[in-house]
Image 1 (cartoon, rainbow, N blue to C red):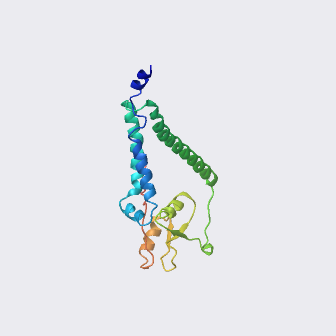
Image 2 (image 1 turned 180 degrees about the vertical axis):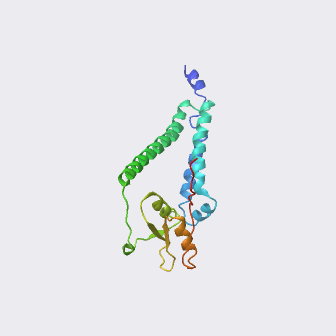
Image 3 (image 1 turned 135 degrees about the horizontal axis):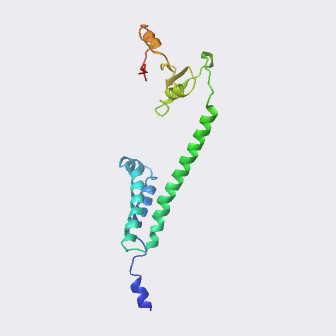
Length: 191
C-alpha cells in the first residue's frame, strides 16, 4: 500500500515555474536598495516583475496540464487571471455608471464664463485635450488655458466659431492671435 502511494505521487509538489515568483520577489527587494535601484531601473527591472509573474502562472498551467505537478495548481492561475478579469469588469462597470450619472446630471446645463471670473486651466500633457473636450460637449463660449503655471506663458482661448469668425481673426494681422482649425464643418446639400 505504501509503495503504491509513493509510486503514485512521483510528481513534484512545487512547480518549477514557482521559482519565477521568487525571482520577482528578489528583484522587487533589490529595487529598494539605494544605488542598486537606479541601475535596475535603467535595465527596466520594473517590467521584469510583470513578465515573470505572468510567465509563472502560465508555466504552472503548462506543468499541471503536462502532469508534472498536481492539477490542483491550476486553481492559482485561474484565481489570478479570473480575479483580474472580474475586478477590471467591476471597475469598468462602475466607471460607466458614474459617467452616465454625470452626463445625465449635466445634460441641458450650460456654464457661463465671464472674463472677470479669470477661469484658467493650467495644462499638462495629461490635460491637454480638456479645453477641446469642454467646448465640444458643453455650452461654453471659450475655455482659456495655458501650459504650466508661469505667468509669461501665452494663454490660449479654445472656442467654437463659424467660418467667418475664423477668417476675420486670421486676417486681423495680429501676431498674438493664431487660429488653428480643429474641425471644419462642410455644408451639406440635400438631393
